[in-house]
Length: 189
Image (cartoon, rainbow, N blue to C red; front, side, top):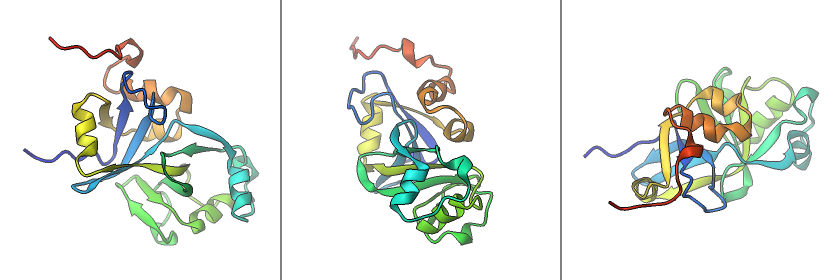
């Protein structure tokens, strides 16, 4: 059997997943290998604005239109570390720590991209998280088999343009599912 690879997929929390970290969450899987998976939850804004975030890093915000841009809780791992999911419409060679996920999206975690964004010189689309979600070897596959998650190919519009409170439902709609109609109960025939 070919191993599952969920890179560039959304995993959508099923209604029965009641872990408060992942309840009604959508996570974008940035990397999935035999060793495990790494993703960013894209629908958990936290009470920190981009301008406040930058001030904590002593970065000046030149592009004031970005001041209120939300920061997200990307997951429970390394919540003191920032991650930037962004479009590939600028040269990747500009950023010192970048993982190219596909032709459209990359993940960076260096201060230089934040400086460029603050100046209005960064990628046109970005989402900033504190922390990430991580799964050890076979953990995500096991959670998928336990019906904790649905998966669907990622959609840039949902990541970058859909209001965060609508991302869970909209991601499920890509599968033709109204996730609010799915029961959280588990049954056996």
